[in-house]
Image 1 (cartoon, one colour):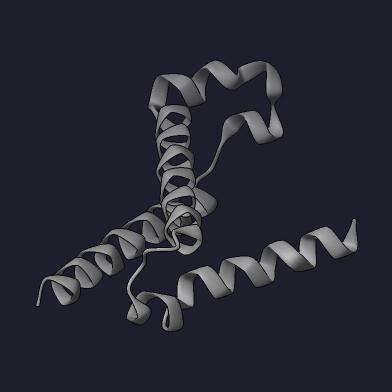
Image 2 (tube, rainbow, N blue to C red):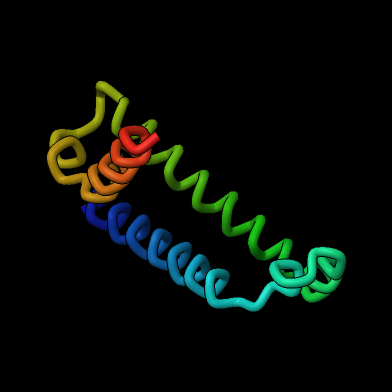
Length: 98
């Protein structure tokens, strides 16, 4: 039961981070069009929000990678980790195109 609750929590956390990332992608950053006016993005809080989202995504992926490399992980995590497989596929494609 604990594993199910933990998995549900992680799924909710990941979905929340992705929703925030989508909101950031759809946001209008003045500095994208007028770099000298980047202070407006800072003033509106968009810059801090973007940095927090980056930090959250980075922490999530680091935990995911650490979990995958843990030799003592339960078998259910080992065989059914969709997030890691998706991430690893994207990473492989990125490495192969460079």
